[in-house]
Length: 101
Image 1 (tube, rainbow, N blue to C red):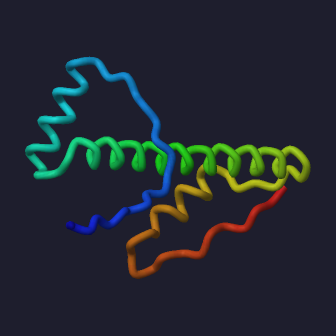
Image 2: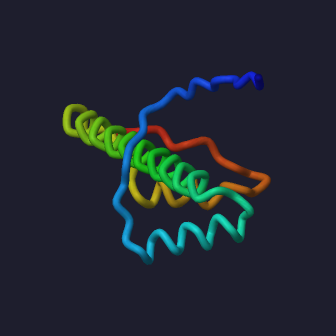
């Protein structure tokens, strides 16, 4: 009698309703990459989650910066920022300008 190993998979199964066109495109991409459609869908979801998490971090950082500016008034001007950025990638890369009132 053959022995079967049981593989316990972690994770939650979630169904997504696709249009026939979306499904066909996923299958086409999977074939072109020699992958399973499941891999294509997981990779797309992983990239979306990573991108949205980064966007949320940026949003929260922006709000925190705005709150700090509102409370303290410290800032750098656009000209100061541009002058600093113009040095990036050169032999004379400058340090960031100091914030001021």
